[in-house]
Length: 301
Image 1: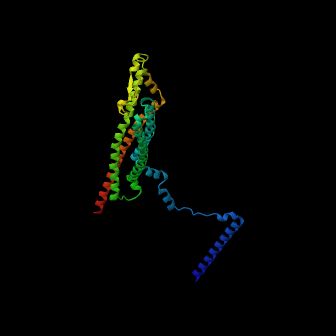
Image 2: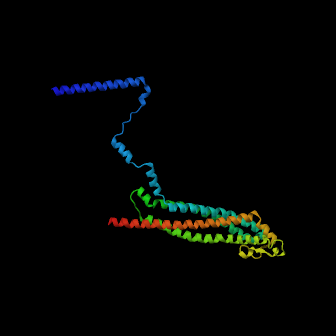
Image 3: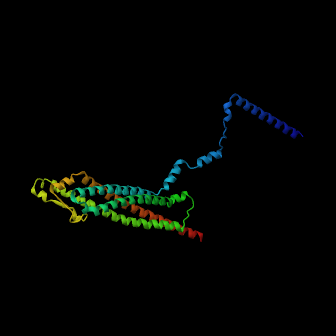
């Protein structure tokens, strides 16, 4: 009985304390109405503080994300975009300048270079297609490099591959090799106009040299553009000599076209290097997929 009475007295005292505390809080809210919206947050315990300290920080997350970047594919993509942009942009303007030089100086009859004008116009449209295709292809290869990097596989969990994924990776390997061989031909083809303009420029430098300047032999130094096969042999005049050739070399069309062809050739070479890097990256990705597929089969059995 005594224990029951003691418990009742303790409960009544707790109720009094709680009621007093509630009265104090109510009086505080009545005196300061803006304090009702205040939210009291519990103080974190030692376990919560340990969990906060053990959670990875921003620096660790950044390092983990940077480890998932396929740097080879990224460098190849930047180099491919730069090379294709230089080749397409400079090549397009240089071809237009070449047509202007031919029409003004080497082939005054329009029918003589009509076929060449159509071919150059077709090549300009092909340049548009090349730029669009390699923009999409570079993005696809970069995405394929991201999703087959070992660090990304660790980030996204368990590695899983299918026969369709391996076939797609093998298709990228084959297509990249074919494009690499094709761009070797494009690189060699882009060197032809550089060689032609260099011959014309070197001939003009011979004319400007002190040994031949002002002599009668200057008019015998000529350039026959028909020997390169870009215009027919019956084109008039087709051959420019002496001071007239020097005037052509001093024009802005010749200077601009010559240097743009050099830049376009350099862009084609950069694209070849980018495709070589793509070859190594796609081959490595395909090997990883094939190895992981064999490893999964062995673990199943």
